[in-house]
Amino acid sequence: MGSALSVSEGTAGLMVTVPSLVAAVSAPLVPVLVGRMNRRLLLLGLMGLMTLANAASALAPSFAVLVSSRVLVGVAIGGFWAVASSLAVRLVTTANVPRATAIIFGGVGAANVFGVPIGTLLGGFSGLRIAFAALSALALVALLALLAVLPPLAASQPVRPRLLAEQFRNPGVRVGILATFLIVTGHFSAYTFVSPALQKLSGTDERLVGPLLFAFGLAGMAGNFVAGAALARNPHRTVLAITVTLAAAMPLYLLLGRTPAGGAALLIACALAAALAVRSARTNENLR
Image 1 (cartoon, rainbow, N blue to C red):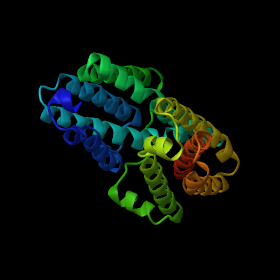
Image 2 (cartoon, helix red, strand yellow):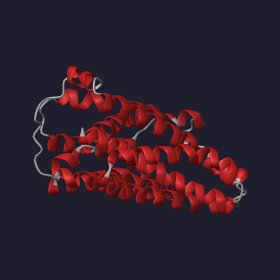
Image 3 (cartoon, helix red, strand yellow):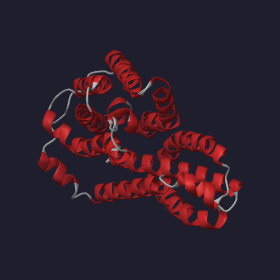
Image 4 (cartoon, rainbow, N blue to C red):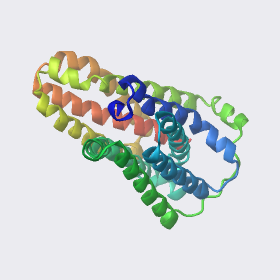
């Protein structure tokens, strides 16, 4: 991307950093700003914004315009997940919430498996603009699907800053937020170095890293659905057991991951545990 835009690799990285930071800020702000807006209309509007923002990225005449369009992508991502993550509570009965949430977040695992390689393939063969255009087209498909199947979702009450602040008085919410933050931060900090760890610590052939990352994504998808079944039986015990497993998997890699087979097994175990832990934390927050 840097060579295509005539900027350094570090500068090109702003296309990832900027929307990520904007999404983090937008997640709590969008529900506050929209007040009582019907959540169906909100989701349609956010997906429409995603469609237009990616189209703007594909047509951007300069890097400055491209980064500006990525800001809009960040708004759409943050706002969408702030609302979409709680849809299961509104669409199904309480008993089916864990399974329904597993299906919703199964899309994250699918994106890890298919999104990055497909995007890389499109960018490599057709160029950066075609990849962004494809994202715009996919967002449009999602918009049309939402329009066809999502029922009206009236807001019971507007989200006020005071109401958000009051949530922190709930010990369960505080623990859920802290646990999610620590687990996701730890997971992605480790995942950043998964390729050199597999090659240098486990002695894995470089040609096998790609297939192992594909298996990592598949394991994450499976973890989402396993979590749904486990949470339906005992959510708090499930969260505790999975978090302990994930915490133990990292140091165990130094002891048991010294061979290609050991490294691959622990990589899959980490993927399962991370998916289970994140899904568990999110589901518990929704149930509260």
